[in-house]
Length: 113
View (cartoon, rainbow, N blue to C red):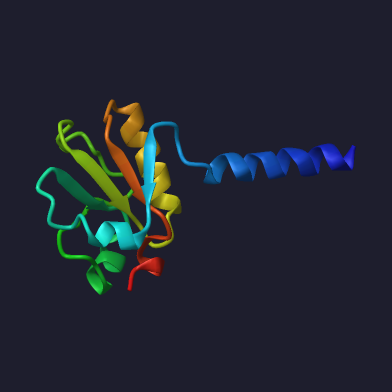
């Protein structure tokens, strides 16, 4: 009986860290090559304090839990957070809102050099 609980917990955590269907995942190295692309909107979902402490120039701070409705649906939305977990959740929300081109930055600001 105990092993069933362990399996359920493991499956839950794997499910939470898996990227959403249709969400592209990129590294910070790949991000560096696209920062000047006018066809992309860059969104940082960390708190305003985290964003103020350290950020990447083209990113706009829209903390997780805010409304994403004002983002253009005709451009790719590139999302970053501190580690990649909040941005993954934000990407899932964006997909549910009908955004087709959504990209998560793997490792987030922790991986940014």
